Length: 487
Image 1 (cartoon, rainbow, N blue to C red):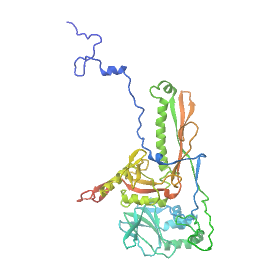
Image 2 (image 1 turned 30 degrees about the vertical axis):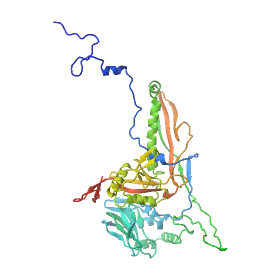
Image 3 (image 1 turned 90 degrees about the vertical axis):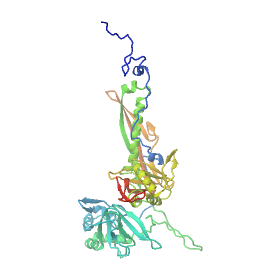
Image 4 (image 1 turned 90 degrees about the horizontal axis):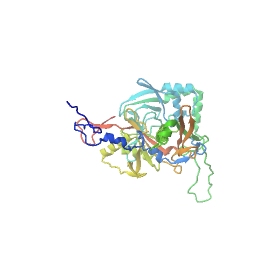
């Protein structure tokens, strides 16, 4: 019986078993040239912050911010230690209070810290009442409280919203009365030191008594509402009145910013660099992806670095809290009102989405604006730009920054130095480090940068912004139903 013989050069069968009558695509690809993309990379973001910052050339590697002399200090935030359900203030943190600024006696501070009494408050509970004797120092360990006042026509006003680390008092050392009411807006923990307890400690400490005398005497030279040494002027006079003499004093210890660096060593084998460069240069692609990673880290550092990062260096007077949790138009308006010429908002993408939801609930539809050839979200014609380097906590809270930029406007500026050796991008270099005995080429890739806030009100932040979605309350319906927020 004759065997079935396949003729030489015949094609194999197709997928359905029928004989193939033409060359298969798999075989044809052996002779074809593959069209390739350059290496793709996850994690590349628009990096809006690096785009919008005006970059200042720092030729000497150090940037000094000279300011007018500030005479009043002591409005910082206070840190607490939590022990179960109890909170206690760190004694050294009491120096953030104006009355204890620069007081150096650690033993007395420790005694004062031990005299604070904790109060746990329910929402709506009053902490201090307007018109009552102001005889307490109140530290907010946790929660959110509202400072309430009365308007010109007797209407109730929310003067401010305070949160963790804030404090309030009203000339506690004198016989004054509270000009405002403070009420808990959420479950809150407050540490309170009464004037009686304060006086008991002061009576046993000559050092504290002498410090209080200096505090009552004031800084000696008049100062303006910003705490700066006053410039004495005359206006409105018509005759030969005496014109006051003055001078503008400077801060004697101005802050200096040294350029920071982000670096890595890029390694490429000589065989790869020599033989596998068609159609794409291997060294060039490796360097391109490395630079992208460095630029992402650069933006992260400018936002979060403990030394020069924008978020850690926001002045305490420029830190605001949301009124209800999610970011509302009212909150962004409050953030806008804290500075002149706010140029940009920066927020985590989820915060932008939460703000959009709040606008939808109110029937508000903000108009977008054009920036660098792109259409972006905006509020009051101020671009609202995404920045995923702004931290987002596990509970879904984040921050929204508002800034004025540029040296001419005394705003926020980026710092770099161009013209460095082996520069491949402004203030970024790739320096050849040699070839080792295994034939591996090494390049030191370095990016030099920093950022500076020229005056405190150039940058503000809305803190504890909730980004969760709102669950409608039972029995409620519609877009405006009240409810609670969940991550």
